[in-house]
Length: 187
Length: 219
Image 1 (cartoon, rainbow over the protein chains, first blue to last red):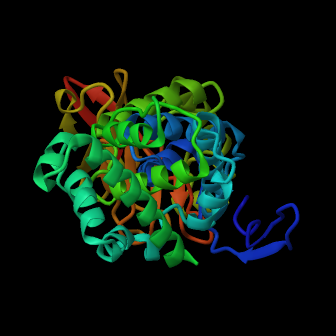
Image 2: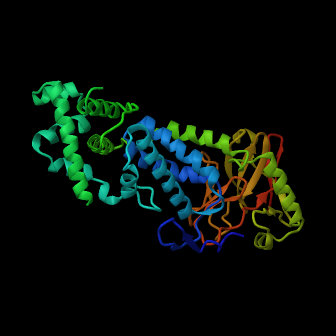
Image 3: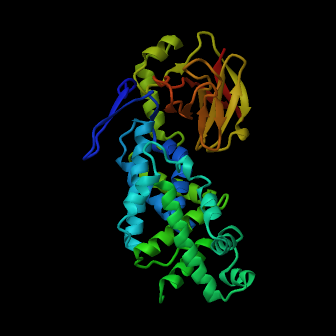
């Protein structure tokens, strides 16, 4: 019988001190329940890092296809979730590295995903609104028109009284500014 | 594309139209802009909710991949044979249910066999199409009927933890305990439990079909 076996769980991570967790004995005994209880969370987490449905669906599939056969069941719920969050970090880092040459993606992903929790951290929710509020008027306007109101670049340009080319420049600069403000909020 | 402004504009267009963005080697500055765009895109309420069809489709794909190694949802011929073997090994005839449940081997299943039971109709066969399940109550026994490709099986719907009546989740093919987070498969096997010691497998209830009626052996 497996109950009682997992009261203490030691997590060993290379280069860090071993962590010991006291578990309540919650276990997953089949992969279908793992999928049903975690699929939406994994998808939403991945979407929050790629921002589009086709990539989010592909990476969500990759996480489960790779992870489920590796799990030895029954397994404690926190252990399975930690395993899934590690898989999410891995596929996201690989995605940004492979398609955009990003070398710092691991750090970016690690900063925002906490172990044992497949949801974005609470401080993240509402952060986009706070970032927009801190932007200069024109930068905030172009990003609100594009991201919140769904304007095309041409429509946004018309609303702001600039050429489409200038709207694109405004958009690029506004995104860079938003990234700077977001990074300062995290630090 | 010629410059960062154009590349980022195309990336944002793709995000806002839910298309797969074009790939390109991004500078550190462009990467910052990309990630800011992703964050703003995700801020739209509901944007990050998955398509239900995708979740279902991936579940089916995983099932076909995992089936050779793991037992699928529902009752299989192999499960029936194994269950029958374990029940026989536990000494079905005349067994006292409480003791059987306590002493059964891990994953084993007792069969409810009342001392003075009789066959009672609880549902029409037509009410339980192949692949479907239906809750029944005989007055003394609460259970679930399962049609496994034409074979009718029945299992107790009383949680083996503290006796709460289980709820049938027909879509997921699961029985869920409303008292403590415990989920049973329709075979009676515990699928997941947040209890320190997962409860025993649900007892099987003997069932048969007579004249288009499903009957169960109960008191």
